[in-house]
Length: 503
Ligand code: NAD
Image (cartoon, rainbow, N blue to C red):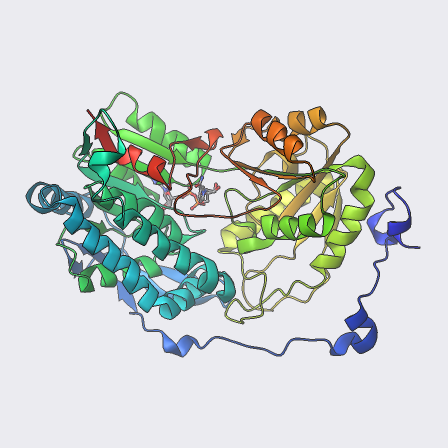
């Protein structure tokens, strides 16, 4: 019996799905041949220190960065202590006072534009390295991470000479030295979100990549050097939380921009309370993807897949809570299982892979623990019955039905390929449930009615709301959160404001 014929939800193990025409015709023969990208194409060093004052400098206390798909060590990175952070901040201060703040915007624009162009020229190498260091599928690094990161530099280059005209009645001034700390889920893209607007506004930078994904930041440092960016304008220090804290607490830093977990965001906000430093926090999320019964369902299912399985669900704005109108629950669940059956999980460097590796063993354990809590608290689990590579950190695409609002899987950020499905009957119930979260970063609304879409969007407490689509990004569009998802905006004109003093 097919669940399509009834709106009564059967237990998942009793549900059958209709076989597609290709499956009926070809059965198991309908397989993709491997199409791996060639990792021999890229070059990287066995050991990295830091990038300070335009030079690659040696460091100490090295730690390994591992390819999460193979568990092989890619390279070793130094940990910057307070003294190293001091020298990076001093280089940034000198560059700010002697060169960058004095340079006309039209000249700064040329460097920023050149960086964006050089990212395009080196796109293939950056995409492969990002995939190897992070575990993301190559088709995403190739089609999303690298082009979008480059687009941010090109976009903000366009602002550098127009600042004087952008804020009528006020004169914009740069702030000084910006300290920036970024996470591992989009290493290049998060670096671009931070570096491009800061440079356009006339600030200099000390940035720290995440300890599990520092490789492409060092490649970016090569690009800065080759682009002729004046020494000290961008400095990169490697290391873990202690290095990040040394940047945050440094007395000669004027602005802190942090993207990462809400827990670390809290520590940083406490540390900066009462100081003169400016702060923006881009933190976690638990986005609600809401499907009404009048929605174009096949399109909505694509949005659900993209919303939770893009980048293995390591996405702050992931649509990790699916709110489905009760009357269409069984249809949505059936269609979702059907669509999931065509997801290919495995080698991130294979161009056919849809879901790659989980970034670290630590993150894999956290996902497994939260998934176990879902089962323990009474939700019903479905996991794609695919084979996983024997080596590496992989997790099956998963969803839960019979989820209650109080379950941990409905409240906590899982940051993995795990979807929690809840239901609602009325638009008001959808709004109440969507807003029942400590986070407020993103949401999606699927409906045939434009007026309904806008009225629901107006009632949601989320910084980014997509209508009949999900996970769409553009450098000209601001991004940021409410509540425990942080404050401050990145992207667009709004993304310049945190780096400017308007007087
Ligand atoms: P994390 O908070 O553990 O680490 C983020 C960065 O902070 C890393 O570089 C880390 O080394 C550094 N850090 C750790 N402790 C620190 C301290 N005490 N002081 C200063 N720096 C410190 O987060 P993560 O696990 O790397 O990233 C995942 C989180 O990032 C998720 O919660 C996700 O939602 C969030 N995120 C948010 C956005 C957004 O725009 N809102 C974008 C991407 C990721």
